[in-house]
Image (cartoon, rainbow, N blue to C red):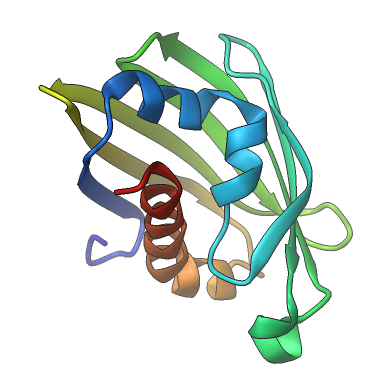
Length: 157
């Protein structure tokens, strides 16, 4: 993460074809399986990966997360760019329990085929952080890395 903690870049190479990695990012049934850090499930997962399509996810903290168990972490967003098997760009809002925006981000995900493997680069830019965003900012790097670990496990690395 950058020094001001406003950007995060994650690059991973998966032993999976680009078509499968792309589908894992565009099929809401697959998103539901890996989205969020470890110990989180997604009882609500609406992910309409098309330009102008909406995102509505509610992450639910499980018992593995101790004192956070039972907390819901909603997020909404909108897709700006969807270039099949190449790039996704979307905005996202992390919301608090009264639906106030904690954090606004713009995320770009690029996919590059490498034979039967896929190189994926994620660039997240925090565009707005509300007064209650400190916790979300503090956990952003760990949470995203755990989430991408879960994606890799689902893809069979």
